[in-house]
Image 1 (tube, one colour):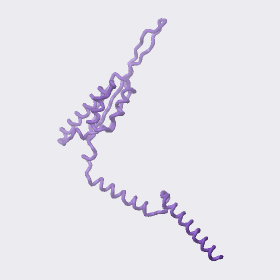
Image 2 (spheres, rainbow, N blue to C red; image 1 turned 90 degrees about the horizontal axis):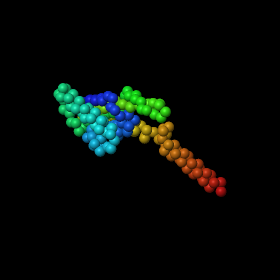
Image 3 (tube, rainbow, N blue to C red; image 1 turned 60 degrees about the horizontal axis):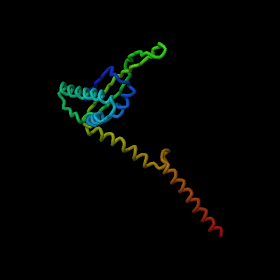
Image 4 (cartoon, helix red, strand yellow; image 1 turned 180 degrees about the horizontal axis):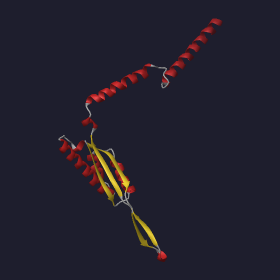
Length: 175
């Protein structure tokens, strides 16, 4: 179950809001709520509203599709803050001049999604393990493979031992 919420033209710069949104990206929704609640940043309040709206949208979608949804199992899949339109204002400056002021705005977008465990059946994880096993067995079985340094070292040490043993036997034979 995936749902999204967008809030446009929030009266705060995108750069300041990204500091907060980076903390909740990929987190579970209850944990994201806790991060936002105890954050000292002013942007956390606006982002909390958007996250709350995204969760409510997920609940409404689940009701429409008549599916079960556990809000505690939702995760923040996608969270981004983009720049919005800039309000241009002017303030008086020295010697009759005007200094521009840029009042920046931003757009907040958050997507929440149910956990992969609740959506995907257990059989798919077993298939991925079955596929991974032959690769591991094949690489472990071939000691002389290109990626295996251990196999090369053992061959080199075996050669050295053979040469050393052959050298000692020749010396004994020569005496």
